[in-house]
Length: 94
Image 1 (cartoon, rainbow, N blue to C red):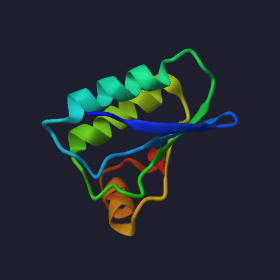
Image 2 (cartoon, rainbow, N blue to C red):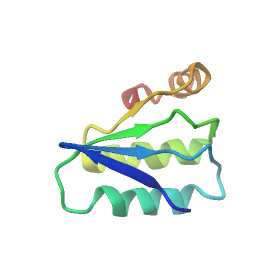
Image 3 (cartoon, helix red, strand yellow):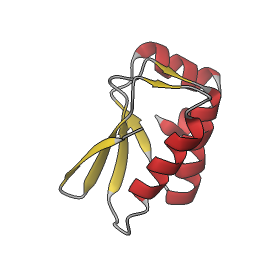
């Protein structure tokens, strides 16, 4: 899996893939960890405009990264993704 990102000023915007299922959640977490842990102090956002599905394992990976790296937020999410996040107690990501 290749995670795309861009840096604009002091912000890093990470493009989330269309799907993050249980099988890919561990690789997803590892790649995001390496990307965020580059030794920079960017304010980091997860761009969810293409995200159609994220498993609970994928959400746990995002929450784990948020606990380690601080205020990571999801942006450009679809209403159904927002509902899933809130229904499963991941309000801190939005």
